[in-house]
Image (tube, rainbow, N blue to C red):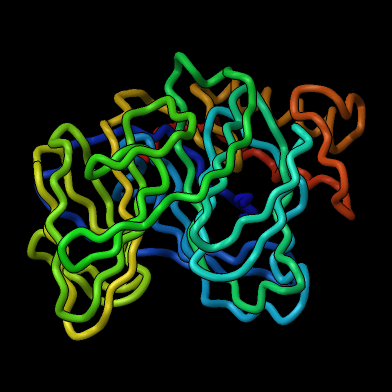
Length: 323
């Protein structure tokens, strides 16, 4: 998924310690044009930019999708990150400049490593009916951020832990690991609890964690996290306790070791400096949008009916830290 805001927020994202559990509120962002898809964005924000290496978290739906292209995200670029697509309901067609053609469907994860540069499109299909899911980004560490781009797909197996159904779709949790390429110690898992249910999750105390709640208002280590909110737990906890109230709970748990690096994230690019972001944008505008070199850094998406998405204008001032 692309960040299609007309004035995307710029900043240097820094991992910061927190004294205890924080509740992060989402902000609504329309993605697209006339038929925009409304998403709830909890990362990044001024209160917190990163959870481990997770640098971006959108949730959306349930949104009716009575026809194809209710979601229609034109070919757009990425650098220095991995995109993680996870659906609760619906069907989305993914195409990228590696030649990948795959569908995002519930219970299966699509992982795209942008590395030094890639472009892709996402379009909901005619049989989607409902669009409901999350889109997550992972910032690549400096040592790996210019790796070759890669696309992977995997169908994890859900399992039962206490009262919960757990589905680990990236990294490792509870002895379950996912055979997809990662460059950071991290985890992502869907957690489902019936009303009144509880689960205890032993976790790595070096990790910080976030629970992005889709339905219900669970207690996370004793604090209430309402639907659409993200509950953040800083490093130091060796167990997460999630308990449902009167309503069943569904959410996505993300976590990882603090990145320990400053990153500059603007639009769909992750870099390390203002000048680097400027260079990424100029290359995209000239090679892909301007067609100066369609087979350049970002390649070409074949099979999408439409033109690449132009980058928004950069702010007048240099990209600077978000305080």
